[in-house]
Image: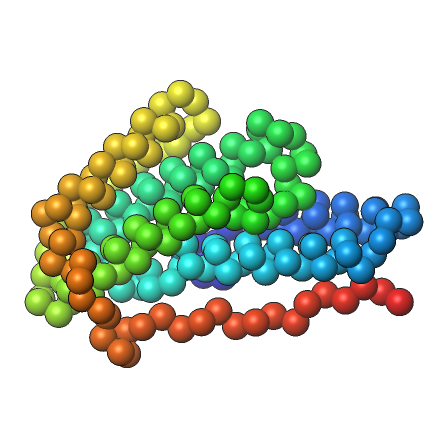
Length: 198
């Protein structure tokens, strides 16, 4: 994972809780092979969706103040709405299923991947025409962090509207163009699955 957006302690929480739940179930006589397979699939799905949603091609726009600020607002706001809020709503059991691997989380992962892909396309165009970072000079982003309150959905909606405005004013130029061959994303490496103990 990228240290810029490292989920750090969140992932430790998901991994430790899910693994402890897995081991506890196996020690209580529940079928290990089935539970290990489900555990592996959830984490594989989580890592793949996480990579596609947050990390893929982000370095194209990292450093462009306008694009990165918008991405940061959306990434963090949707992370609060979809990941951080779960343990507060459902309790500790929410940590047994990693981010983007739970029921219905595919929609959120696809939304994040969509705007990430779009911001990368806009950044590639800016790089090609020499406008990348055009609004960087003298910029400061005084961000008040998100909180789990009634303002959170409105702040995320505002960021989505800003993205929509960017698409209508600039992004449309990239809607029907494919990235250059050397700019195409690479696949996520396949990890060896965890095997149940004999």
